[in-house]
Image (cartoon, rainbow, N blue to C red):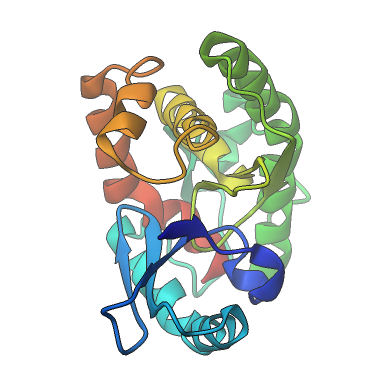
Length: 239
């Protein structure tokens, strides 16, 4: 027996994750595994939903830590000091020197940006991602939902700390606004990936066949590789 866990019973930090519950009459204890961006919870048939939810909530920090680990560890910015005009961040997949950010379309960066505390600077970058995502990511969803004939009930845009996107059994697709720092091909892949979960709430062969309708396998591999290599650099904003 397999079904997505109802997110209302989970801690807020876990809402964006794709968590699947698998029950078995043979199983005697609770267990979980993180794989390919999916959290699988194993439970005995006799365990109540309330008990499973409480157990998963108790493992929240472990889950978030293991979901984050596959992103890689290659920070490109010294995050212990304020960013300077010579610091680099990713924007639309390109490394941008902050002093020349306006040339790359990162319009939130102006002379007032420099000299501020690191916290204030990170807020400006978060706001830039949010503003851009409202147009870019929503437009991508609009395009790909028509191409794939898979329509979400609702789209959530948030600067998540632990995932690039998610989809739950209620048809809610969530996308990480920090994806605005990633290349276009990566943004396309994440959008297609999450839309395909509307049809297959798992990572089965049928799911990947659906993803391949929007992204060719080489593009999928390239996007996953980019996120693995550079994902931590996008999340520097939380460090």
